[in-house]
Figure 1 (cartoon, one colour):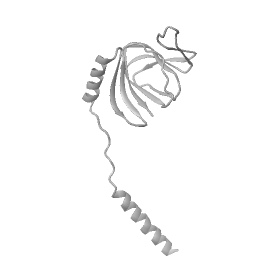
Figure 2 (figure 1 turned 30 degrees about the vertical axis):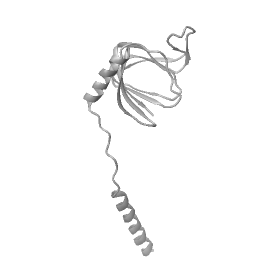
Figure 3 (figure 1 turned 180 degrees about the horizontal axis):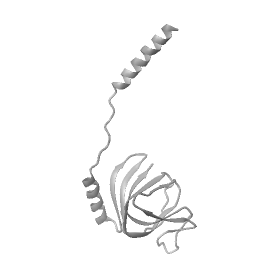
Figure 4 (figure 1 turned 90 degrees about the vertical axis):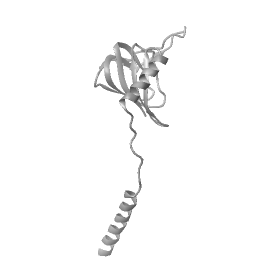
Length: 147
């Protein structure tokens, strides 16, 4: 029994040392000024919406979004989204059914749930769930994490 405890301790120590010796990559950092610069550049390229890319990978997207007007309904078939409101307020409509007008105008949601969202609110939108900002009070910004 004593030999098993000693052998187990030796194996644990070797594994711990092997793991401790493996260097891991550092965290990803992006400065607020860089995010703001990306937002400003994007605002000149898009109407009513700016995107400050923080980091996008194969299986995730992290952006700071700023909207100055309501938008059409969208759905992401792949990827759950988290919206964390950082500025302003608006109305977010989720769920229901997306209805596209025959004339090709802006898509809207029917039978969804509308909620007023404001600074500090967090909204988790499961993949496949229609969502739409139907009203914006001046401007609304949110951290968007899609995974």
